[in-house]
Length: 180
Image (cartoon, rainbow, N blue to C red; front, side, top):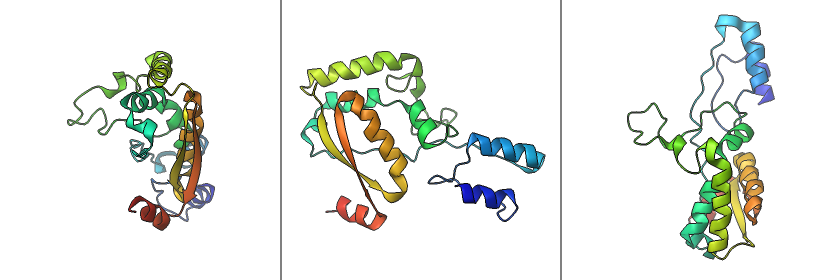
């Protein structure tokens, strides 16, 4: 990302790209706006490309209370800050301005920042109710370009005593494992 920024800054690139960690940092944006003025345009996009799928053969994941606890526990605002340098727009499947967005997802449990503490307390209780107060272990398969999102998920879920190991592989290996 820093090489990409440097090349753009000196005019060797005409456009930057959205994708696996090509995001500009807030500092980069400030520098480019200051140096390039109206010649610099920056657009934010929804951060809908980071999705975590849990293996349904894991006994704990088969319990809807565990899945709900994970959904309530994860802090999307923190994820946005860590994964996308705080510059992406956190959204549901459709951005709030889309005519296809049927609910105000940002007010829903697990997504609502104003109820995050209460949601996380509910998540802890759901884990107890499901019989997983002591948590469980899992391995998170992550493509080599997705290390940061994987690290975020693994480190965040330790708050629910869900202990993950990140297994980083290249894309062909990932596809092979997913289709076995």
